[in-house]
Image (tube, rainbow, N blue to C red; front, side, top):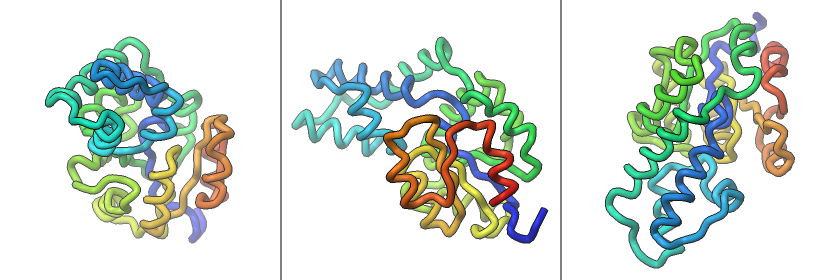
Length: 218
């Protein structure tokens, strides 16, 4: 490993490790429809991808012109968990990529710990990250604030400059750069995010199978 090589790779979860974003956003859209508001999944991707739940709710309430029911967030979480049980899969190629990465890895996500461990357990990824999973809800800092990434690096004893973050959301990419970390933008073949990512990320990649080689060059 060269002096410039990373000492820690920090993964986002939704859309990077687990193919969960459409599932979770669909649950949000369906729960919002019960409040009388119609939001397309495409709109939800643009508006809510990588955004903490409280901010999603605030935007839904703004569009509604009133507050949502008290159980709204719990209902979204419940619907998401049930959908995960039925549909959740790992991102294609992530198991093989993790097997090739020879530096420590961790997860840092805006999601609650219960959702993270549930998703990683269902997809048999938990063993790669157990004891090194960081939730914004436990830290009290949500992306795009850099606090979550800085907390993960500090806890694991790695300087920010020696961390590489793998992200698929603009809020996560911005958080990583604000933390002074290198960031690899995973597009997953979504050409719609490439222009925005290219302005911020150190590099972009489209297939998880490309990640190990990219890390060796970082």
